[in-house]
Picture (cartoon, rainbow, N blue to C red):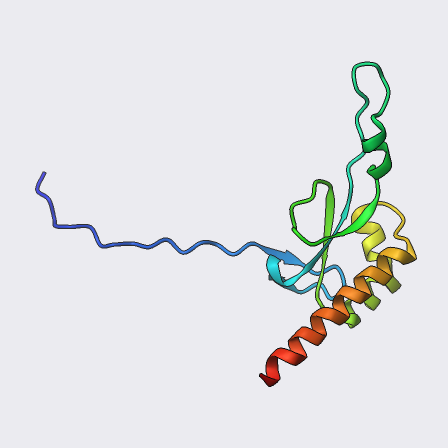
Length: 125
């Protein structure tokens, strides 16, 4: 077979992972959303007991800043309207399959306010 010449230099564009906001239902790049995660249930060791460190966090719901915590996750836009929609309709409860405490909602509201303040401050500079 004859060679047709050098192959064109193809640079692969990486696919940006997208997730759906549980508040508004919109699809956004994963990095633009806040992840809420429910820690997985602890598995008993060979003696049948659950280690104390695992028992303390099992099933606990928290905000995941890294996006890499183990467990079942749900995503929210960085908008207070989305948080209030998700809270009113019980969407985080449904997505994470557990009760969501007021503490978690307060932490989410705080993070959203910080994100909105950063966006407002960044536009003026």
